[in-house]
Length: 476
Image: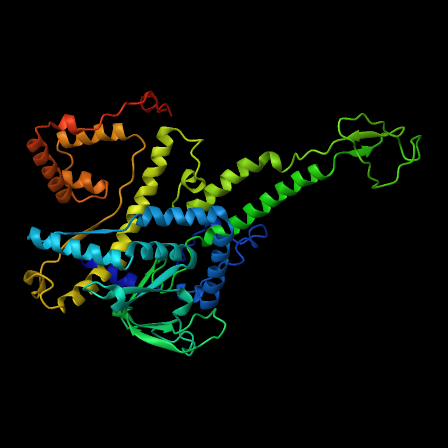
């Protein structure tokens, strides 16, 4: 034992030799071939990389592309319509059914009064083109509703503070943060910077009065960049290729033919003036000068690869938005039932993630502000809601997505209910409907059927099943 201890102490006296662990990655090497490709890679922080000038340039280019490119506009509109639909619907989950119905009805009527669905669609489109959207909670006395709360949408460039020093600790271009990273106040210009007469005066609003909707791609990110940023160069390439194809077709159409000769230089061929034109008469036979032949112009390249290039680049453009190609193009002619269903599953999953983000960041804030104002109205809310610490558990319903084959989905739904792997609440939620409201409506219908002496089969509309529904291609 002493020998072991002596050996241990002896080893401590020995000088240590520093050992370096070397690791080699091909992606970390800089060569003459990849030097230009990685020239713009930097180590800036997320807020320094997304500086006001960078975000301004990306916003302007994204807005220009969406305003002038039919595919870009259609993709953004489709994404907003699928994410928001006709608008979210509130379902309260408190223990009092009467209170639940009252709050759902009143909030729904208020949402229609301020046109909440349209404002949410605008915010979703703004996030795609501007990178972020701001909504200010204001009081609008002209609503004509008991609760005068309203939303005023603000564009991204209005949230800035011209007099704020750059890289000031706790401040990022119009937003002041505390030491925990929580927004404290927002600086909003009284006038849009793009107006003719620029006013640099701004209002300072507390964070409780402003909703900031954006996607954080990196830790510590404070401002958003457009969702279609990676696709902006691809849109430019698509436009250039389209113009090149059009130019090739126009060239072929402008020149009916070209004269050429196989005779060698200074050979025996009648002289022809270079670039001379010949008027061609329709349905007529022409004779060429001696030694000369005529050839018609054809638009072979790049017209022959246009459709393939367009399909592939649109697929790459839509990928950064999690949109499948058939949705981006509005064309499913190259799809069968199985592949179309698979692509839509991933797309709808991305939509559900987006709706969950909207519920947490936007809708919960709006509901909380609505309840805070509604509590101040005398005898408006039930007493159980006005009490401190009241149960306000809720969830949001969105429009459901139609199935490609309703008959197959109905059979699958019946199977899930029969083997108890789902519930009516889940099945109705898939369609964006409240199961309690639907069952109450169904009970009313059943009561009326009993009064009229009808059966459910008598009241059910009869539809002829088309053979095409049963012959969907599932071979892939």
